[in-house]
Amino acid sequence: MSLRNFGRLAAAAAVSLSAPLFAELPPERAYALTEVGDRVYAFVSPETNGPIPSGNVVAVVGNESVLVVDSGRFPTLARRMIADIRARTDKPVRWLVHTHWHLDHIVGDGEFRKAFPQAIFVATDFTRRKMIEKQVPYVRDIEKNDRGYIDYLRGVIAKGKREDGTDIPADSIRYLKNQIEDIRLELAEVPGATIVPPDVTFDRELAIHLGGRDARVLFLGEGNTAGDTVVWVPDARIVATGDLLVAPVPYGYGAHPGAWIETLNRLMAL
Image 1 (cartoon, helix red, strand yellow):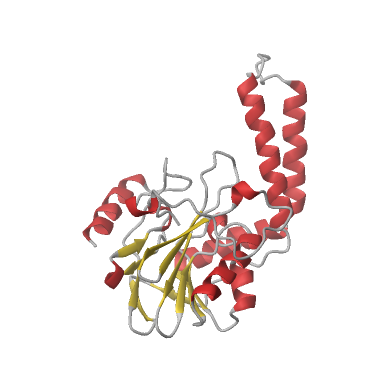
Image 2: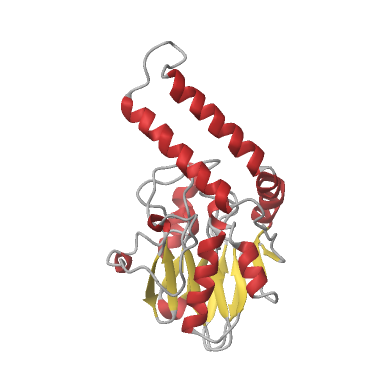
């Protein structure tokens, strides 16, 4: 979830301290919590140039219930987010909307399901299908695959050579070492996590009534994926965009560049 591009987030620096970090999660991975509009809270992840990014999360609080947009990459932080939400409202999380299927937006699902078993998970059909096809087996096999990748990276570093026999530059070696630390973090957090396939899917638009305010769940077109969802809160004039907007550079894995431009035009029209 990428609300970084909104100017009101530029000043967000304070990290919520409502619950302690677990020892395995480094403090620099903690989010900054800011109220971006009336009872709309953004859990903004720090930027990273490693292979384990973490998407932002948004909570929209109504008079009767709460809608959460995405669940983030780390179960540890999802538990903190739940505590932060409960510290700000006694209303339950009744809705969790997935903007898309990438792992850094869905690994906290199980924590929200445990905390709010009546919550309804929502996404496009495409997102639900990809979560089941790609991410459920990925998380199931993550320990084996990640340990194999760490062994591979260690071998590359030990050799210190590219395939053409030239030396790997020192800055590239540092980057590979940082990759190993990122993957170790994933190994400490993700095994055993529960991906929750959405209970409800929609085509173009879904109106969710939170009590005193509405949220519009929209599919505006292809972009970062073929199923990107945005959540528009008209009374707060805020839209949670998922990875249709990313700072500093869009992440274009499996993207639709031509359609992305038109989707952004529709997004701006809101």
